[in-house]
Length: 252
Image 1: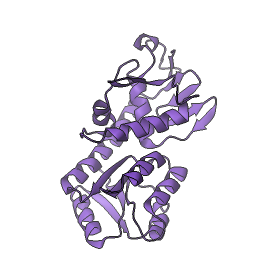
Image 2: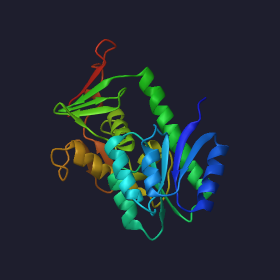
Image 3: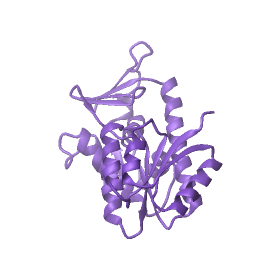
């Protein structure tokens, strides 16, 4: 099995070394960057399985790096490291496309659990796509599950890895209502009280990209007091996907 390639962007030497030590323990190939300029160079030098990104850096800050990565490499998972007092930074980071965050001071065991959850999710999706490749059509949306591409009215929609996984989860469970805690467990790979606003941020970003009017969504709708669902019926899916066409039609 190939090692996961992880870029750790952290300007505090002791923290960076501690993270590298524990990532090596779970068979990761780790590269360190201690400032924003080096992070920018490393981030685009190769394809990473994970970028662990401190937001407060010398030179370009973590938000700038996150924005640049999402602009050029939509499917590189990003895990932010933030301080407890920087709620605004966390919100901005999630809005820019970060997949998750851990606050400092952090528990190493929690950090590693989140890293493993990201790897499991990516590996699980890859195995599923290789066996069950199909294109799902939902109104003007076309979702290529194998290529991890989304088209809206024939034009490409740039989704982050987590946004795509979130959309795919709803597609695979049309009409089913999911609480924020259930989405954290199913899409993020863990459940954690207090992180529900992470789900909210990703839902809002996804709606902004696929809905004609995000304030009045047609596809991913809010079920007040419960959670979210894809507004389509399970019976609309059955039987329309074939081995020959690999196209699945959903009618809302």
